[in-house]
Image (tube, rainbow, N blue to C red; front, side, top):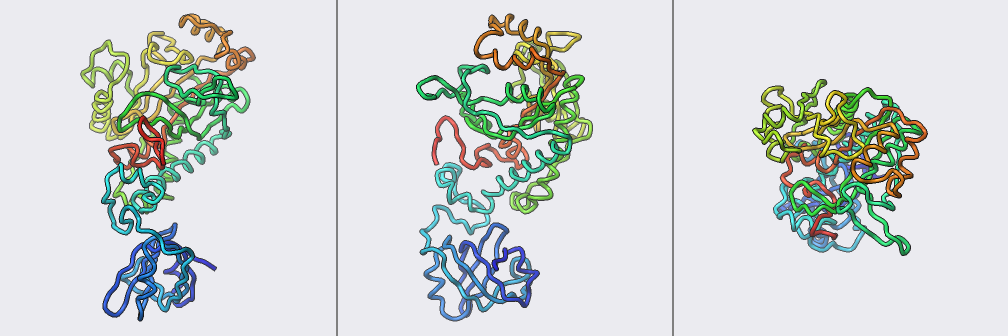
Length: 427
């Protein structure tokens, strides 16, 4: 029975079988070493005598090795395999486009992305998704523990309702359709069914941004839930979700964090909160600005770290003119919204807030935009509100951006498996 490389130290004196990829071959005068890589790490195999077989096994050839485990403090985990019988499971592999055995990635990002099917095997390159997978587990666990139901909603939709110019159009059996920019309408609808719902899935934005922080397709972690008082209730659930994500990364992706030399931050129990107008003052921005520019976000992030020792800060009360029509206005001053952005290390990570929940408010909000509640884009969505919806709200986290900020990646593409942007549709 096959064991994994991390189990080898617990099997000293036993005959074991391991299998994986030839990570590296090291030849000395009297002995050679085959370093085997599997999903759990690296194993050292000692090869004595003829090196002819090793010469035939190029890096990345898949092999199975049976041998005896011997203690060796110099080996990975303190043990190695001796007297091996090596069986190739494939023909000798072609030379990889990058040297996967080196501790650091010597190639530039374009080379890594062009050769992603192989480059992702590098322990440093794959570390980003190890962290992402752990974060997904933490997100799901945190919301499962609070009575949320996971849903899956369509990614092909019939109308473009949010920033309609920035959608991907496609042919749907001879008619127009679009890739969904978010599950917003569906997750609100499902609050009327389950009260508390979340979704993990792709979203698509045809925005002409060619920056280190934007992708045309990314993984969105969405949540929506009912019977709230206001957007601060949403922020509280968001805080618990991110705490769960960080905890899971620490528990499940410790090796990836070590490879990337990353220390986990903590999210405070009470996240610092600023009103949008105060954020503009801190950033030294024009008080009439309707949104925070990237430089403003960085300034607010520096303030939160300096004044509160926090990598996280929430900015609430964005102007209604910059929020979608379904956003609930601030009751005391309808110029502002009951919405927020959560900044992580000086960059927007999450947008969330309270939604309108009365049908009459939706009719008024759409009429103010010169649109009709009876339009095909809204009619099915608004059915739920005609038949009673509780006060509710929600948020959306961009997974790749979360991992990029956590790891300090300069470009979100560094932690995206197969990024899609203005210029990249392959591999």
